[in-house]
Image (tube, rainbow, N blue to C red; front, side, top):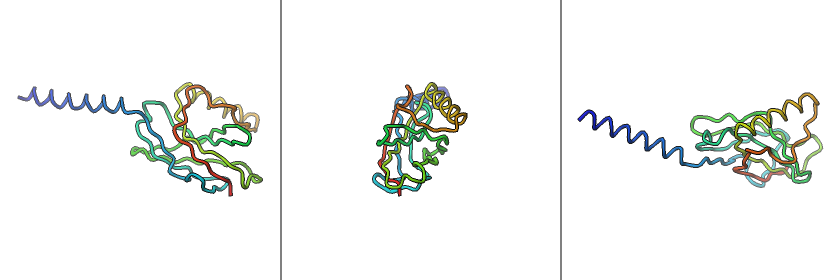
Length: 149
């Protein structure tokens, strides 16, 4: 009888683990809202599920006017319940009225390394030119359009 109970528990655990591994990751930006105005520096918040299966989360600010992606240095703080938050910069002092896109991006280890190299190069040059495209292994899961106040 004890063996049957242990077997049932083990089967249930294996089923749950298998279900979690098959459930695809999801990431959603909850703040700022689509079409809202943002300050030059703003908190970006969201919710996520199963992102550990894909890699890690990054926030990227994209400027359609110059077609450049600006990965944000601060990695989002992801809580155990999947809620996350990170600080993002939306241009400089003269960018009022400029349109931006906030991207929630999952990155694998290779893409994370490329972002770290980008950050290191930017800090050395004291220049943040943005990227023409996101590195291989980076996938945009959500995007919202905002305007600088």
